[in-house]
Amino acid sequence: MTRPDDCDIADPALSEAGRRRIEWAWQEMPVLRELMERYSREQPLKGIRLSGCLHITTETANLARTLKAAGAEVVLCASNPLSTQDDVAAALVEHYGIPVFAVRGESTERYYRHIDAVLDHQPLITMDDGADLVSRIHQSHPELVDNMLGGTEETTTGVIRLRAMAAKGALRFPVIAVNDAMTKHLFDNRYGTGQSALDGVIRATNILIAGKTFTVVGYGWCGRGIAMRAKGHGASVIVTEVEPLRALEAAMDGFRVMPLREAAALSDFIVTASGDKHVVDRAHFEVMKDGCVLANSGHFNVEINIPELEAMATDKHRPRASVDEYRLPDGRQIRLLAEGRLVNLAAAEGHPSAVMDMSFANQALCAVHLATRAQRLDNRVHEVPREIDQEVARLKLGAMAIQIDALTREQERYLSSWQEGT
Image (cartoon, rainbow, N blue to C red; front, side):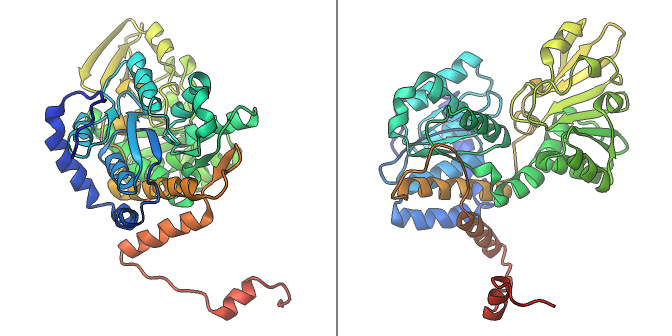
């Protein structure tokens, strides 16, 4: 394998450790394995330049390998400064010949320099996790737009940003909302985030969750998963919401529902998963229990108002690798995990490979969909085609050795008719 000349990684010497972990994850990704076998023969992405702004993890590495096997010219950068696994980045460069621009803990300046580097690749397709790549193209590289076939978006926050762009007529090429595929958000957001967020909290703190009060801010699919897993660990779970239907659902799922200011005074842990800005703010810091642990499982580090916490604190120190402890004037201490960034990636390893197998199968299939369509899609946010969603589910069931029934012709006719009734 030829090593790329142009890349920026922390340490090439980490590559062998990264390769072993990538291969470990590969064993749990049977859908991508099947797609790689198929695409290696068919080469549906041959000659397609594809730039990805994704979390540089073992699972992403296996997506990149699959895209490359399909013929794509793949270049990657990180979608979060603290989510890069440096050994994986090294392995992608040294063992798989895929250029990577990502270093764990990189500065904001370096982060955007890396985004510009993958855009110098002049992509025909983008693959985003948070829409930073698409945003950067529109703001700083408009010359790339005319040749773009389109892009894909992995996460809820990115889809929200893209829909805002489309609503204002600012989106100049089509993007497929991979996040909204049923085989993505029902599993990745719920089971993946549920497990990995709790994993991050536990690794960062080593504090027992059983018997504690655990508040989840936001009851979307990610919040549902976190609440479910926290309950499974023995916590008393509170949910806070601004949407009446989600609040009602949380209550009927057996969780206490109340305003966050009330919950903050009771909570031993607060984890945000809202996708919005400053959902935990000064009013909440003022009433939090001494020793309350704060973490974020939303994409960007804005859900917790960290500048306000910094301004309120009289002292700050780091007792553990992923924990910053802030002392307030009255002596209370608030513990912030992973600098307010994605706790499941910054303090742990992200979602389990078996879950990302479905999410990244959607990414690969949607990239092929963009590349092989006779006509370009119009400039808006598109749903994942139903046949792709169904294909991912079918492949996953097959990999799990699960068989299901099929409709008879009589049943199909009945479902498509209106004449029969009581």
